[in-house]
Image (cartoon, rainbow, N blue to C red; front, side, top):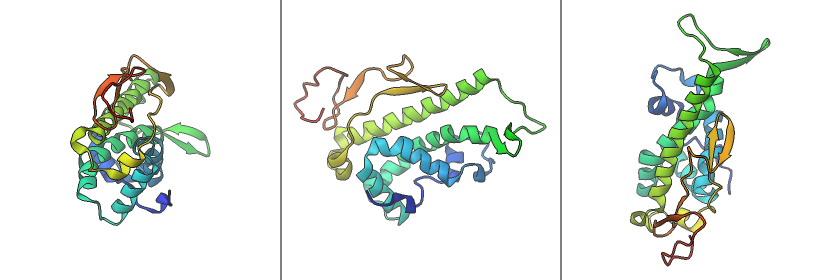
Amino acid sequence: MGNTRQYKTLVTSGEVIENTFTNKNTDPVLVSNNTIVLSELAHIRPLLGDKFYAELKLENNTDALSANNQILMDFYLQVSLSWFVRFEVINDIMSNITSSGVVHNVDEFSRIITPDDYNTFKQDTYRKAEIFANDMMGFLNGADQAGLYPTFAANKPKSLNNTYKNHGMIFYDSIFGYNGIEGCGSCGVSYVNGNDCNCGCTDC
């Protein structure tokens, strides 16, 4: 894969705030490009695969997205990525590193939420990001999109371990996350994880 770090991010800080923040007047400086890149690398690239991710980065950087890739960006990827960015940026917005150590950012009109409330808030942010990501992958793997995303189809990553983040810890097969259903990469037929798909395709 080429140097995708030289290209602009797939979503801007302003779009992250518009898509996911209640306070639309949040300072975009709080959502740094590094955090957006981190979110792309941690949450989006593993889903799309290196080659398709690189294709989107290059086309987006030159404002030359194909019609199909533009649809993916507008309706699926940017929303999902925005929620993942919010998940990654919450800690930085809530706290700050100073010469005195790690301190909370609190003004005269605010109060710090309890650790339990904070964990619930962060967990819910990840849940929403995961919902949008699953919807994006369902779109890409759907039978209606057959042949429309050839780079993805030819280089799709192996199915990742199905996990769920819970208060900073990762649970496998959690009651809150993965429901045991896989989808055939070619025809989109669903089947129970660990069982044969029996759809006739060869890449389940």
